[in-house]
Image (cartoon, rainbow, N blue to C red; front, side, top):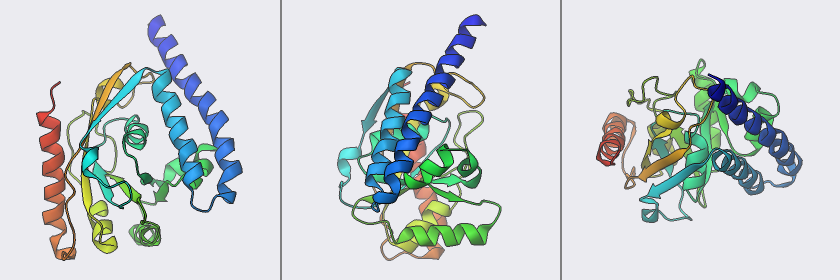
Length: 240
């Protein structure tokens, strides 16, 4: 019990320290950096510090299939709070993570994360969520890409849950390819409800891009099935 207390204190304390150190920098530079790249870079530094301090290593495969200068809509499974920082460090693109609006209310973090490119949507107001996503589409160019956790929230048991259609709908509107991303080991290192991060390796498998050219809203179910099948196959094929 004592060891668990100290591990939780280390994780929570260092995370708070990095948040207090990096977020004010983002707030300082954000208004003077219209592209958002500097703020996003500071956000990646925050992610790197957290994973490095807790001895979490990332191994990514399949990213060589993508062009750094092309924009995509990434869709991934979600089992842990470690998933967003791991994805930000694994992928070379400037990512616009789609998050729930409640996170934007966290003092300091919420303000800074908006400047770093996180797009917060109100899941209880579908019309407002669609309007927010539509505004974001204009910025998805020159490598700037959207990132959706397709299940909408973290899995309670580490297993793949039903997918929501938001990512597919955005990809169709933006006419961008969808890239399935399988994130492994996050649940083992930091499952839902645990307060400390276990050291280890997270693996990220980037699947082949799925083209949306020539497809419309009537193809959403087909595309969603393709994305889910790709992620499920990569989750199952990777050795434990």
